[in-house]
Structure formats: C-alpha cells, structure tokens
Image: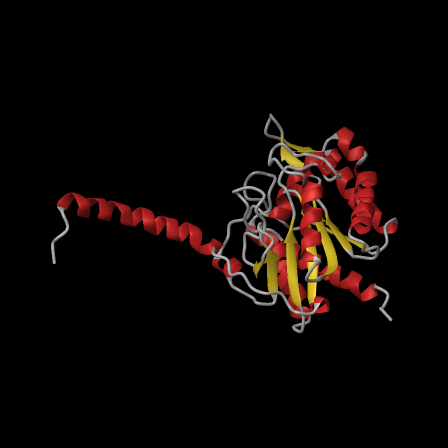
Length: 288
C-alpha cells in the first residue's frame, strides 16, 4: 500500500482539528425528523412568540439537547422534529429560552399526548412588528405573518392548546410603553380570531429587574419607568382579557448584558409558563 505523500499527510493533519471543531459545533444542533401523532387531539400545540428572551439567548448545555419523543418542535422547513435547544432560529445567536422546559413540563402532565412547540419569536421585534403585514428589516421577516403561517401549518396535524409571549424590551420607552397595554390586548384578540381559537389560553411574561434598573452613564443604577409600565400593562390585562395570565421574572439573572436571561433563568421562566398555562387550562369550559 503506497505511503501518503508528506504534503498530503500534512494537509490531512491540519484538517483534523477543524473537522473536530465543526462536529462539536454541530452536535447539539442535530435534529431527528419524526411523524406526529395520528390523532390531532393527541398532539397539543403551543405557539411561542415575542422577541429575543422568548427565542432564548442562554448557553446550550447537555441537558438542553436530551431527546424526549413527547416534545416536538416545528422546524424552519415545517417538519416535526424531536425538540432540542435552540428551539428558535430567528438569529444565529439563538440559544436556551423558556420553550423547551415549558414543553417538557406540559408533556409530563399527561404522557398520553405529545406536545408540539411552534417557534415564532424574533429578537428585537417591538410590538408594532406583531401586526399583519409588518416587515422587520433586522431579520428580513414578517413576525406576525410568519408566526401565523407556521401555526396554521402545525394545525394541519395538531390542536392549538396555548400561546406564550415574552416581549416588551423594545417598547420600554415613554412613548411606546404608554400604548403597550392596548396593543397587546389587540394582538391577543387578533391571534385568537385568525387562528379560530377564541378561548385559547394566553400567558405573557413580565420584564426582569435587570432591565428595569440599569447603570447609567455615571455608573449609578437608574430606574426605567417605562419598563415598569410594561409590567403593569401585562399584569392589568388579567382583569380585561379572558383565559389570560402572566408570569413574573422575579429572581432571574442575565447573561451579563442587562438584557437577556441566562440559561438557568430561562428554564425558570419555562416552569412558570407551564404552571400558569396549566392553571388556565383547568379553568377552560369542558367540551361536550
């Protein structure tokens, strides 16, 4: 057998570290396409929308890639896959958000059903981009239209069981925060109408303390009153919108940027979303 030429051997040795690095990068993102349950009522769908903290920016760890055949996600190509983080794909920095923990807990409640996660969050998208026809240049997408289309694709094989929403960072200024409550209420009504799901439970998340109190130019902590107004709006809708609840972001931490939840906090939010969703579902009128 001929021996490799020295220059060829050198090129092969140089290529090995690079190939190994690519494998390490791609390994957590490997996806397994699977068939959804045959019966729609056994496939419960959840739409995950908002901006970057719903999409997730936490670091992916090994536990975030463990497969669970009872939790699927709709891929960018519209196929059902075993859910692993990152669930979302809005930007290359997508990481751990609340979605996977939420899905796992919803599936654990009833092992006779499968949970389908529909990722639709778009980092940086203010609530004005969550209207029909609105174009978001940062990601060259239409947040509302795209999420609606993905939800309708998912509904061909399953049943919509709930919507979770985490957004408001981009609207945390005096002008936009004043109109936030009315816009979120209109968004909920529009989604329920467009998805023909008038009673679908909707859970929204509040902004964390690290977004409300940030260091100013002088290094001293400053309170963003507009962020507080966003949280008040999210809470007050509980008295105005049926089948609606909200979760707090108390006790959470950021990744060091005063904007995005770290991995542990994203999972904590997933737990809170699941608890709130299950509470709303228990109160739904029973189908005859």
